[in-house]
Image 1: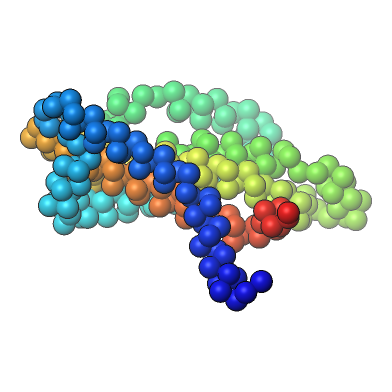
Image 2: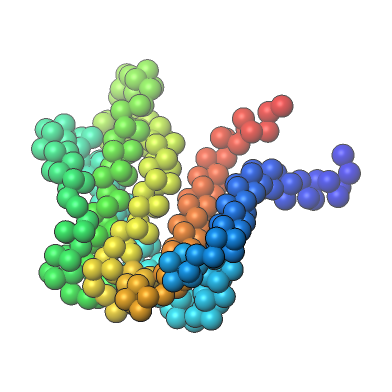
Length: 265
């Protein structure tokens, strides 16, 4: 195998994985562009992708400022959610009655409509960063908590029995058996929740904020600029994909043994 092939092998693998998705997105955009150009539909109803790109580039400074605000709210809210989910998961794992008490409350929290809750949270906590953090944590806490609890439950009973026969305390068994077994479930929940986090932050900004993609979209809508609305939506989707990719990369780094199966012929 030549050294040049070895050098470009990661790039070839990346293209092999991402190529179909890139081709699908490009095909969709080209079909969208062709429909707008051929149908003659008004740009105030459905702007073409090319028009959205031009409008977005013309407002890139404003979009960057609002995107950074949304990214900050998303990461801080999601970090708070991870800490709370891990704390609650340990509590309910060690205390089963607490699980029966907490889970119904958390399930009820997921049934609350964001469109009704977001304005109330803004009313209670103001227009700063706190209501966005609260809403993002509220949206992402339950999926992370369920993933962690399911991961603990999937621990190999024989390993726990072996550790117990060796005199390991429950806390020691949790550290040696339950924490390693929860890793696949944790990262599965992480990838799902991070996509909800961006939506939660934008919803909080939409309900009331000074900066963020939510308030940017609201202002663009009120000014009858669907091109800027869609430009902000594309930026939001890009942020979500970036965070999803970061979560996947973190999983690959934290669980390198999962790549052994990918290398097998």
